[in-house]
Image 1 (cartoon, rainbow, N blue to C red):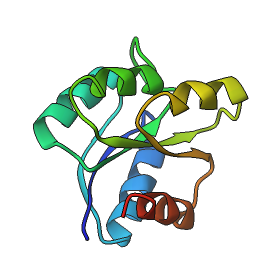
Image 2: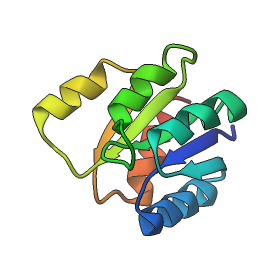
Image 3: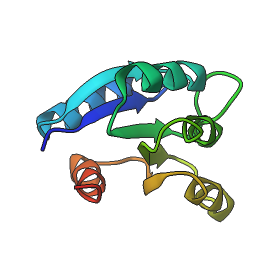
Image 4: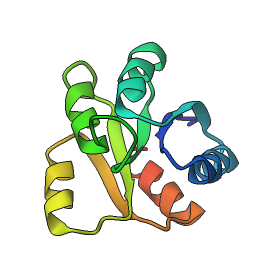
Length: 119
């Protein structure tokens, strides 16, 4: 089943790579944004099935805080993609609608396995 996926990543190269991975797996990228406020608006507008969420993003709120705000109005799940492997970060993420927590660099196989957890 094709999933609608929102990508939240402030590194343009990684955003393009993640878009390529998602589309190569047969899913649809509804939008790619660089910050939490845009992610919140995009979630309201596009109602994605999954959000690929970087934790350190542009703007005043990080990816986890973004998901905390999104879960006030949506039950969309997040696949966190992060370079931060600190246990405290994962504990914060687990308090949101987390589907998976992937440490960068991620491969297409990592993305595929994470998306399939929802299937």
